Length: 88
Picture: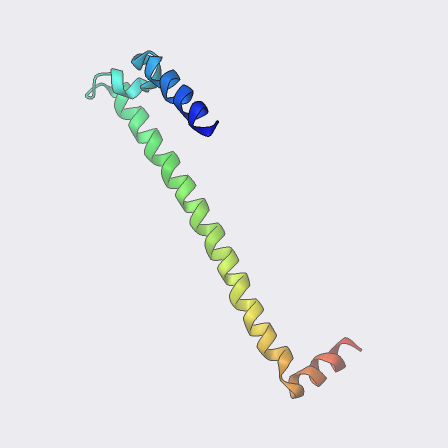
């Protein structure tokens, strides 16, 4: 069944008009200002998305390292008593 669905999917992609699949930048003059502007916008958006993904990664890695440090502090007997006194 998976092979049949995959075959229909490949057939559907091959029957589509190639101009529908290509983006507007591919059909434009590469030296026109509109095409250069679209390319610039694409790179800005890619940079923004990359920045956000890296920021989320750093954010969660920071939480992970802080969690490990906190676990080390709470496992030692001296610091556990100190922490409990602080909560009372």
